[in-house]
Length: 510
Image 1: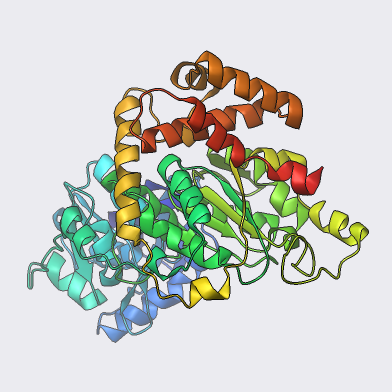
Image 2: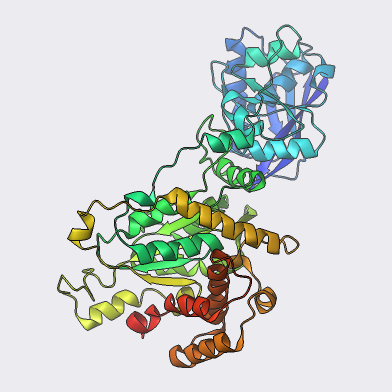
C-alpha cells in the first residue's frame, strides 16, 4: 500500500517542501530509506521502530520503502522521524490518508515516542505557508516560533501518540496562538543601561550617532576604561526591530540551532561577542554544512569584537566583504548558502600590548617595535570599512565616586528612534533603512554639502590622505549627525564632528 505525508527540509535558512512516501509490499521484511538521506535520516529507522513500539503500535512485517522527494536534494537531520512514522501508519491503514491532506509534519522522535524539537522550524513554517499547507504538526518546543507565521495552523505535538489520536479524530489538538508583536515588545526587559556607565560622555555621544545611523565603530583605550560595558549597552538604544526584521533574525538563529527552546520570536536585537580564538569559518560562516557564522547571527544587531588585534588575521580579513555588501555567500563541496549579514561592527582594542600607550596615569612598557607589530595586525582595508574611530580614556576616580546621575538608555533611545524615523521616511522607496546602507549613488544625492563644508572635507582629504571609501563614510556619518539634530541639510558643524571620528589613523597607524 502507498501513502504520502508532507514534510519540510532546510537549506541554509530557507525551507522547502519534502514529500515522504511510504510503500509497503509483501516480501522479505526490510526497511529502506531513499532520496539522498544523510546518516541521521538513515538512523531514523531505529528511532521510528522503537517509538511505535512504545505506543503499542505494531511495526509492519513487510518490505517497506520510504522515499524522500525531491530525490536529488540531500536530506539532513532527524526532522523526518515524525512524518516517516505517520507515513508508515497511513500505509498500514492506521491513519486515513484524507486526514493527512494539507498537513505537513516535522519532528524528531525519541525512543519512548516523544517528539523532540528541531532547528529551522520558522523557516519551515514560512515555506509551508508558501506551498499552500494549512496545518503544520511539529514539536511543542518549536510551536511558538512557528506560530508567528500568519495563515498557518500550528499544532504542538509532545508525543507520537498525541499526533496519532489527533489525525484519527479521537482527541483534537489545540493550535498555538501567537502573542501580538506589539505586546511582546512592551514586555521585553532591558538588560544593560547607559545610566550605569560613569563619565565617557564623548564616547556615549559617538555610540548614539552609530546607533542612529547603523555605523561601525572602533574604540581604542586602556583596560578598564569601559569599552566593553558601553558596547553591551548599545543594543538598549537601538530602535525596536520591525516584525519583518524579527522574523528574519529568528530564522537565522533557528536554522543555526541557537534559538532557546520555547522562546518563540526574538525581540531584542542580537548581540554577539565571540572569543578571539574563533576561526574565519565561525566568524563569517562555513564548515562542512555551510552554517551561518557570527556576522550572520548578529544580523540587524551588534557584532562585538573585543581585543580586536588578538583575532586571527584571516578571520578579520574575511569580514571585509560582508561589511561592505551586507551578506555572506558560503560555498562548500556538499552545500552552499547565502546568509544576510547586515550587522553593526563594534570593535574594541588596547593601544598596545600592555594597554597603556598614551595613558596619562600609567607608563607604557612596550617598545616602539612591539606597538607597531601589535597595531599592524589590523589591516588598512579593514580600518577603511569602520565608519567611526573613537579614543576612550580612563575615567577619573573623582568622577566615578561623584554619584552624579547619568543619562539613561531610554532617553538616548528616544533620540535614536527619531533619527531612524527620518531615515526610514527618506528611504521609503530606496529599499534601505539607515544611512550606513547608502550606496555611492545615494550618497551623492542625499549627502550634498554646501561650499564651506565641502572646503573643510577637501582640506581633510589632503591632510590625512583619506580614501574614497573613507570620504563616503564621513559623509554618511555627517548625514546621521544632521538627522539627530533634526536638520535637512548637512552643515559645517556636522562635517567637523564626523571628521573628529576619523583622526585615529594618524595618531596610531601613521
